[in-house]
Length: 319
Image (cartoon, rainbow, N blue to C red):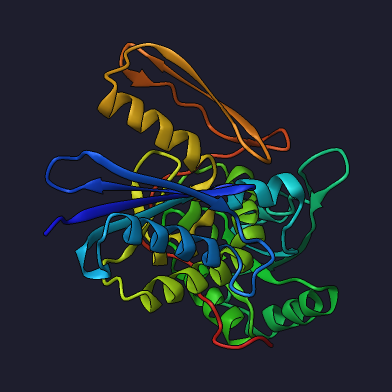
């Protein structure tokens, strides 16, 4: 019995799937289906169609699948097309130095292109006398009234001690909104850059959570027991729960997969790779056997991302 690995790439126009023999690493099948943006299950319907077609073509069963992973351009496309949620930022600080956090966490609207922005509301509290729960709830009331769907909690020097960010995230979740601490997305000390990066993450968080859960449910409905893995922008993979915490890590995961394949299977040492998709075109570079790294820019704003192990909190029901 052949054990197989399935890889799926969800693009703006097409969803592609390949099957690889686990023992020989031989490519044994590949299929292409239209990406199902308008289906009730969203792109998950196309993923299921592609995976089912592969299994049928190679006469395999869901039990034969030992690994399944997919890359997605959803995060990239959401930002390029302005399909983003409004974000609220709760800035926090302590003492005289902490007061600077008021301006540093007020990042304003973030431009995505000439006409579209990530809308961002802002509130700020001081923590000198503990967490001011009443002030925070007043800020959340204002967020709700203005249509905020996700909240970023960002404290000056929060990377050293995230306790306050975690506690305020709990309050936000109790109020019915998704929440994430800025320290989760980036461990950089620059408060403004860290906050801005977390806002970009928060703007796609609600959409990506909805899609990821639909995809997991659909794959499970096929009878595939192998956990669904998601391609990261650094060429690795992550579990679905991590993607729900930091969907921004999937940005440019498609080109990353291409570079990983060139390094692993083609032994490319130097090259320029151009990937033309339905929504965007991406360029990657390998020099002396190593991919060239550069911090991603969103609407002209540089972001800095580092791996972390905790993530946002999500309320079980909307407020």
